[in-house]
Each structure stands twice: as C-alpha cells, then as structure tokens.
Length: 184
Image (cartoon, rainbow, N blue to C red):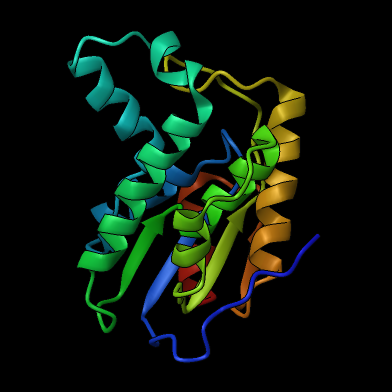
C-alpha cells in the first residue's frame, strides 16, 4: 500500500478521529461524547444521502455514481474540517482519510481533490473502533465481507499516517467512550 505524504507544514490540531468500518459504533460513540459535553461532528456519508433524498433522489440514484457520491461526502468533510479551529478539542465522526479507504474499496482512482486534502490533514489521535455485528439500514448497505474489507482499508490508511492510532475493542457503548477518554 502506498504511503500518504503529509505536508511538513501541517498545523497541529486538538482533533480526535472516531473511525472504523460500517457498523462499528462510531456514531453511537460520538453521540455519547456529545451527551457528555464534548464537541463532536456529524458523519457525512449519511448526511449526504439525506440531503440528496430531500432533493427527491432515491438512495439507489444517490449511490449509482459512486465517484459523485464519494466526492460529495469528501467535499462536506473538507468544508467541515476547514471550519474547525485547530485549538478546539473535537471528536470527528470519520475524517478526510476515510475517503481514501472508500476510494480504494470501490476501486476509484484517487483524484486531485482527495490528494490535496490528504496532504494537509492533522489529527491529535485516531481511534479505530473494532466492528460490531453488521446492522444495515436505509443508508448502510454493505455485507459482512465488505464491512471487514472497509475496516481493514481504514486501518491501513490511518496506520500509514503520522498520527497515533488506538484500536478500541468491542465493549458496551459507555465503556468504549471511557476507553477513548482514558486514552487521549
């Protein structure tokens, strides 16, 4: 796997990434962190689907052009990360490097937008959630094999970056949050 090159002049941030494959408890974890008073962000793939559904598109139409879908999600993620001050402690529900894992999973060519965004990312620490039993819903349509492959690719991408990575074991949701907070 090719190593991602990060710009040496990247700013230091106080941002923590909560990531992992589909159905790994990311959003549940982020919601508990928010309930405990921490600043958090939303997960953009689901948000992108929801905004497109409001425009009258079906989920099938949204997902039909995977490159367009991935670019839409990436643009939302880039915009969000550009709006957060580096000193603010925030827990991100996924981050820009997740896009690279999905591009690789979907066998999409890495485009300039993704490459440029990856060169400027900076995270204090990355928490990769071990996956849970797969639960599909209107926005999540992967099977168990895809879940495991996406999780593997996310792990490879983040471990190729110069940020500390912590693997979060399967625990009850509140205990996972405690584990993360104890490993900041």
